[in-house]
Image (spheres, rainbow, N blue to C red):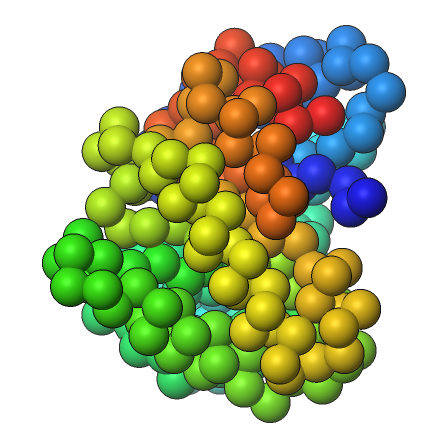
Length: 253
Ligand code: PGA
């Protein structure tokens, strides 16, 4: 049984005061969760990472960045390297979140460069994949997900894949309140595991954690987590309220 993994993606929310307050509420709430049989990571905006890192110092909650750049240093105005993130206490980073793919315009090749750079820089990437509504409605889900998985993991050897978490986030479910049904999510998660199993040893495909994301909330967390191939949740909106995020962690634990 894999240890469940719940991550909170704060996106472009909070400020210098509320980010630290939210971290502290989550830290104190987590210390009351019996058994601690769950990995938890928080993804605040870049500018609040260092303060969040300090506030997390005595807890076993991990810190992650919402994005990275694939070069280690140099003339890349505005970008942030894996080494910088490591330096301030990050363990994880998101790669290819759908808002970066569809709002900012990141393509599969760029996402793959980021996944590789994250691992080489000692970070644990969460590779995000997911289809648009029109792609689901025209039966392209499988094609889109296999392209994103194959391209996103290109060049990763067995040792590197062990550092990766995959997040399935159907774009039509993100921030919309329309969660995928547990069956819809399970179907794609099983497909992702099979795809990984075609590239790597079966055992590695069994071990990789696949999170679901898209309007995950306290009311649906347990049902989603009950699916055999759902190993965790990547939570957006509901991670901004400590009470809701803690309820989701409890459901996963
Ligand atoms: P949501 O976002 O939970 O607000 O739908 C999830 C995500 O984008 O990671």
